[in-house]
Figure 1 (cartoon, rainbow, N blue to C red):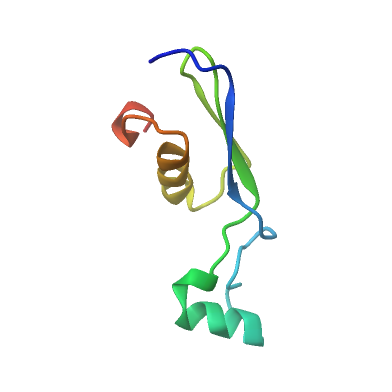
Figure 2: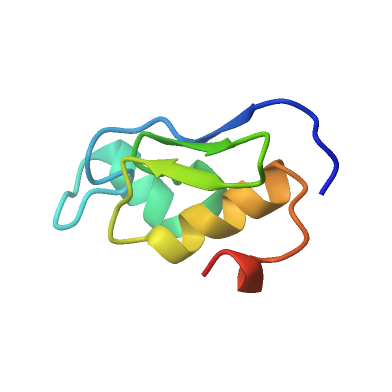
Length: 83
């Protein structure tokens, strides 16, 4: 891996459960149930160090999705290296 300095990817911006919230019937959550483009992941970031080490801050129960977003956002070769 070429050294490009430390890189950070924002993986989510929603509160703890993301959007839609489990069991919520509000307009926003209902719309997100019907339209996946309206879904938001819980707040978290991934940090890719100069040495190639991956650090996930605020891992959630959806860690596989967080790792996929991190790998695509940071241009990593593939998840098999990090999972």
